[in-house]
Amino acid sequence: MSKLNLIGNLGRLNGLLRSTRSNQSFLPLFQREATRHFATDAEQKDSSLDPFLRPPSTGLAYGRLIGFGRNTLKTDIINFLEGCNLTPQDVKVEYNRAFTSVGMILQFPSRIAFDSAIRLMNRNGRLYKLERADRSQWDVAKSYDGKVVLMQGVPRNALPEDIERVLSGCVYNSSSIQTFVRPAFPDPVRLALVEFPSQVEAMNAVLVKNRSFCLNNQILMRVLQ
Image 1: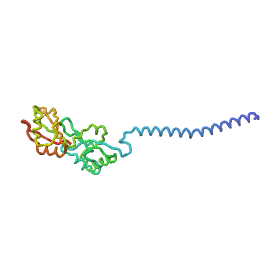
Image 2: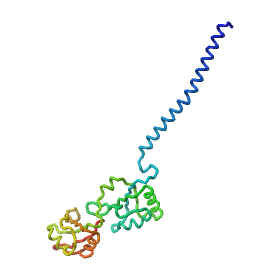
Image 3: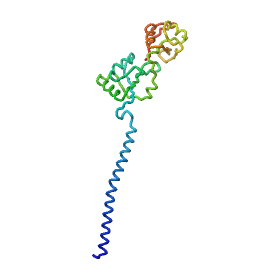
Image 4: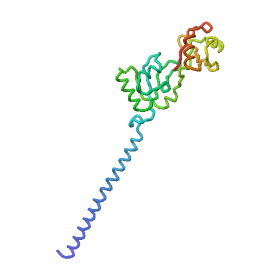
């Protein structure tokens, strides 16, 4: 082999070695960039997950309770969920257009408290059903706070003065009286809502005036929670 051919082969060999070393240094860099890219994608996906799927936090959590009876009170649920740190202000009763209770929206101090409520219900035989809810459901639900009385069976031709006559002797806000007509069988039913200054006054009115007569109709009264 000539000296020139030998020198050429050595040059090509040195170039190949340099290229190999360059590729080896590039590979870890590529791996690091790829790992960083995939990690960023994963973080973005995690951040878009439903808040209920994230780890428990100290933020408020909301649930909707169904399966309770018509006469179930807020205090019944609070006592049932003892240890979940609920107060009467953390419970709102949902009513339909006929003012029949159809659910309760519960505001828990944390996701941990919500999970504790689920476990407690499972242990106690699932008397009620608790499902997740969000803040919008809580905001929409109206709380009557035990200070509003529903009067059912008000005559269609009754005037506000007739309703006030029924409530004679009770302490209430006369300007708060609202009347509604709701479909019923065989005839539509007229309802009235009356606001009282306190829960005690509202309950006293029901105890004293329930089944009183307005004109010729007997009135049924109950407190809205």
